[in-house]
Length: 182
Image 1 (tube, rainbow, N blue to C red):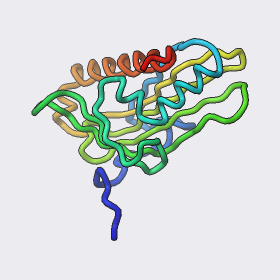
Image 2 (cartoon, rainbow, N blue to C red):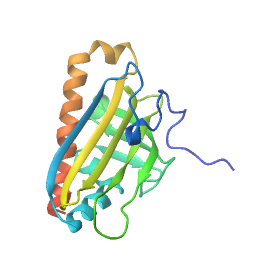
Image 3 (cartoon, rainbow, N blue to C red):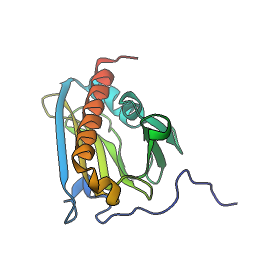
Image 4 (tube, rainbow, N blue to C red):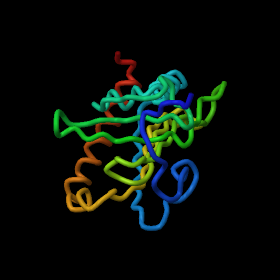
């Protein structure tokens, strides 16, 4: 029997995986946000756990439905924001995952996911927590996208403001994870 997928279709943009180690494709504006969260391996691992179990998305106020409780390559997730008839669903597929490694020292953990048909944008977004060689911990969010259709293109200013708002909510969620808040 065929596996029932949470969302249909295929990744619908060029440059799949570029948030991990590449450049965004031509014609796709990109944004990189990096925020200091604190210091120490324990903090790093706590934030990594939250990122790799969808907790960062939940803490940002998104309604998350995923095929797996743990982020894995190929997992599909539908995040929703808004209320009632104004709810926008954003189907994505995880395209890469990096887990924490044993020991101390500089490293990063996180994942990137790409848009599927029905998402208001076409592109990719990645969420990583990084610890440097001095023990400082940062959240890094990398995204490249463009509107999926005329409707979202027409709302350009509103769409960009919404993206900035959601990014600020991700940062707040990461700060909660860093502080160990339940």
